[in-house]
Image (cartoon, rainbow, N blue to C red; front, side, top):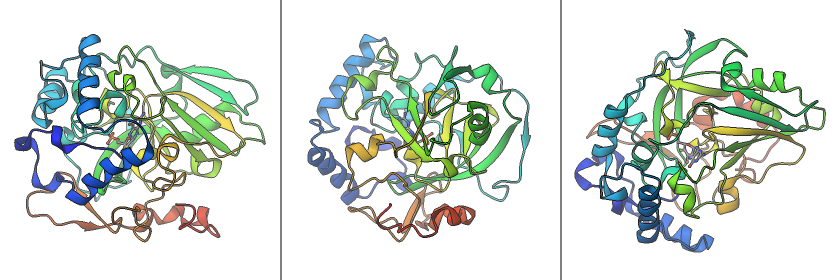
Length: 347
Ligand code: MTE
């Protein structure tokens, strides 16, 4: 992942969130190596500020130089007026200590709104998650679309507390509200040729200032194998903390696969395509030697430029050390799906 911590207001950064210098420097190198033509620093900052200004984003005159403090103010100001339909509580993660709402909603990766962690909360205020439809295409009995309202009726909504481990080496614990992706797959009626599913995110230049900057090949694309997609853990989330999903977390609907690195969780999904061949996903395209299709959390397979054996829990406090990363992020029940697969090769 690409990140430029130079852009953050140092006083808004808690020691627990500081990315080790080697990783940060390495990511800058990655962009150069990947030939994306942009350092995620000065150029993208100025382009993004301009783009945000053009679309009327709330840059407060200082563009993306504003840090977490301003992202938090933005979240407090915007609030969340929409209501979620009723949902049932489940026992998933009932013993976990939750990451605070304000951290979950102000420390984000959503490059369509900028590459800094505070950008999505600040620059997503013009994004409109309603009205919304998801189009279902490819290897299905019949291509069709579903409105977000009908999607919400496919199965009872559930709250599930899941750990999320980012490939960058940090983690959170998030109470999602959503429904199993398996219910949508059933409704979609895939043909026997469907071996994988591709998830395509929104790509709206008017309300997403980040897509005017070619840091990634837009739109954002992710994918799962069919058995992963229909695994009971796989969720399409529409809410968190009992409220409608905020824009910065992927409103109105995003993927959650808690045993995989966070980048698998495509946000603001507009299209779901059933395909025969393994999709070429956005981060694989950007850096095939660094990010794999499977992206299973694996403490035994390091990222080429940093360790994956431990992680920093966001918001854990000043003196909290790194915690040990668990295989499949601790979700051992998924292991049998990868029996016989060399996870070093298929990382
Ligand atoms: N989806 C889209 N469309 N664009 C993105 O930049 N970032 C990914 C993933 N989904 C991303 C995305 C990454 S790198 C992570 S770690 C998670 O979203 C972060 O989710 P969160 O901000 O809700 O914690």
